[in-house]
Length: 335
Image (tube, rainbow, N blue to C red; front, side, top):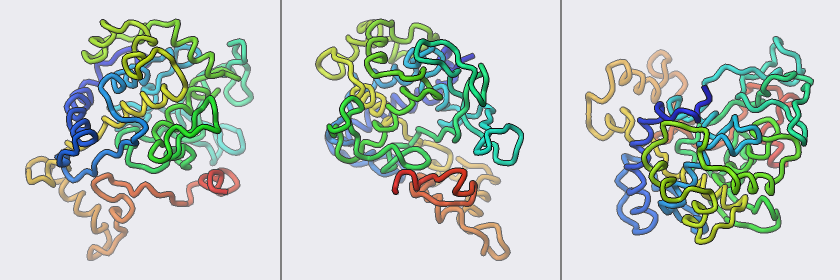
């Protein structure tokens, strides 16, 4: 089952999303006091303020497999909320030597079959006629709005440039979510055929019925679709006119993602004073996480890099997972 075809597993996150949107609107538009347990205020670029109509459009786009060339991949196919926003599906990329079963194999995420420009299957040198696998696994999209840049190497930049006009800056700073959202849509491994263009993406969205191949659609989405039955209508509601552009696609998806904050976990509740929110084992784990498991508490301090409450410092580290010649990582972005 493709994850976008049944939304029932998404129920727990649905409640968080709908509840937190009110908080986000208060913070970003009325500057109310942040009520989220220990979490920073959600950063929202002034060029892309959160609105309910834009959030719901972004959510529909995020979960619509029709955004891919072959109707098999949505953003949510790899970013699975019940797995913390990551991808638990077993998938292997052959790595630097392009040979399966060797020590440099990589755990990645499944994408699409390799298609040529005419949507004919290509006998791929690595994957044959099977689905391709990315060379890095899917990072979480939950709490992703707090990072300056995104993707494992940071190539989705804080400055969001118009994908249809790279000389035009849409968001000067704080637009990494927008930059990330538009990347996979044209990737011929993740969602697209060879040579897919934004004009093709836009024309497809104009012609299809939103979420036509999905079921068990959450209430906020189904209610919006009952009123606005086409993507041009949804874009008109969100942006003031029916024009669909690559930048607007990215801005809508990013707006939805800014409403996904994990601020009501057992850890949050425990830190807020509910001593029964975590089990004894979890409490012991939290203490070890801060002090390290070494003798006398002198072991490695996990929290030095995985800094609460986000459990990351959103920085980049070479932890020796791959030799530089196999994956240049951050260097490809900074050099």
